[in-house]
Image (cartoon, rainbow, N blue to C red; front, side, top):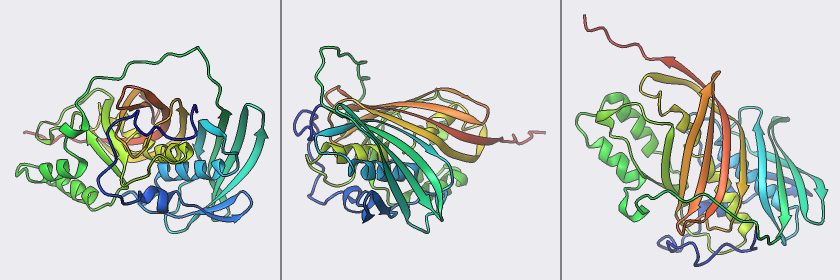
Length: 317
């Protein structure tokens, strides 16, 4: 990363209202040290699947890795595998191995353990700041700003007020609304539930952490982005198929991130997601997190297991 601190004014968007500290910093990513390079993490939000949220494990693992490197190096990439289902009833232990500490790059390996077995393995690479004249990036998509869009709660409320909403969607939306998710989301093109149809495997939404994080250490903003990056990500691969299939089982297999430029995770960023391929009961998704000023902050990729059952159409005879 090119700076030890997140950008204060470059990104735009201002601080979220109020001065409440983000629960992602005070709780979810606040690991308990047990010994040198050994930490314990606890859970804040558990999805309706009653499995641990993958983004939480990635974020906590990156926190553990970052505690073992010096302040003048910054994470530029991480690569992870989810190897067992996480148990939301018990904490997670994070064991850090200092794989290599070099002049320019340092690598840390992290193992997340529950019930004596690894549930997740990760390697994170950190780099000393190295300016280079070799620079380019894609252009950020042109989309409405977050101020012009409904937040997740308001959108769900709008759906629930529709008298023609099918009961299966009403039950699901009420279940989602009851969960206190520590991030804010605003969909760029929200679906119209009364006109459901297959879509391209692409979606975009504005996202930020709830509460205030502040300028702070860039490493913490990267850890929060790691948490955010897994939210609704794999679901992008379902968009062309979700009206014809019922999801029987969907979990992440692996997750990779590359950090390009400083950002603030408590400021709005555009998450551009797409799925170039699905098959073999797997789906591949790719994503880019853009700052409001058009700077590409983070790139992500993930593959997951997606098992579905075809919906049986009702006979009209």
